[in-house]
Amino acid sequence: MPDIPSLAVIGAGVMGRRHVDAIVATGGAARLHAVVDPADAAKGYAAELGVAWYPDPAAMIAGGRPDGAIIASPNHLHVEHGMDCTKAGIPVLVEKPISSSVRSARHLVEEAERTGVPLLVGHHRRHNPLIAAAKRALESGRIGAVVAVHAMFWLYKPDDYFAVEWRHLPGAGPVFVNLIHDIDLLRHLCGEIASVQALQSNRTRMSQNEDTMVILLRFAGGALGTVNMSDTVVAPWSWELTAKENPVYPPTDQSCYLIGGTDGSLELPGLRIWSGRGGGKSWTDELACDVLDVPGEDPLVRQIRQFLAAIRGEEPPLVPGREGLRTLEAIEAIKRSAEAGAPIDLAEA
Image (cartoon, rainbow, N blue to C red; front, side, top):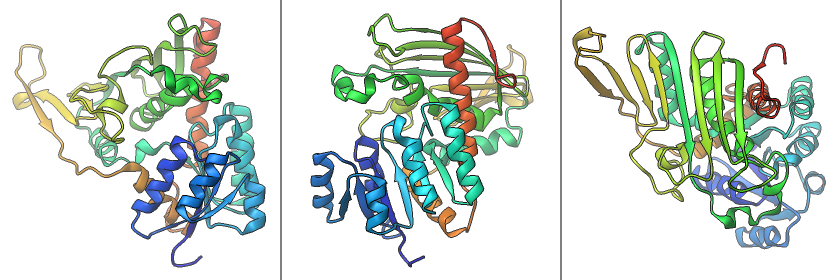
């Protein structure tokens, strides 16, 4: 591999361009190889950047292999584009969801495992330093045994968000596009999800995709969880509006995840740990709040650096293909539960 690895970005939409910005922000640790997207706007974008443009991965591979590829094309194309790269021996970072279905995602994961080509999934929130701090706190027993979890995703998407055609396709609703990040973090922090039960509605937007959903979770370790999601509510309680990861969202000082344990509770993303002052635990004891101080860093840039380390074989992927598949299995179970009106056991599924 050259001293400065080259990365192609497949898909020049919002996320693709954020990945381009993240590559630039690595300060020369990587360089942009090409933009791959059939749209005329993408061709013009590549020209502005001074890099090669290709309409599809096959043309890119024929024109010269990059050291790695970031797939940020529409969800239903992830597996096709991932297979093109994996079969050519090109390491892949594929945006979440890894696919629009578990069955097709499994093909990509198994192909990557068979060939030994690194396959990473873009659950970039795991790369956020505050999530690493939260995981350390939970694993060290700061709040005792986790008993209950609550996550919120409430915000309002404007009408122009839906001007993009693929956002009307099945699987392009907020569960697959947004909530999958939250479910992935809950798995990462609290362990595997054993069963789910969900209710959904599309009453507000009258779209074929859901706009509101409530979910009950049972974790394999015994904890119970609730998740409340809507992209039709004007509110400050979502990761997007609280974590300060993306400057396009005006930040609030609110929390969107609450994790409760036998010795204390944790708020995220504020990293506030609540416990009884002096070791007391009764509801009549005074509570103390300890705020973990963690320096901020763009998780997308950290994800690029970790991708480079995985390409070089220096460390395993933080979110390998198999992890992305397990999160997608949980999301698919949630959708099936909402459609069937019944709980779904993930082990049986």
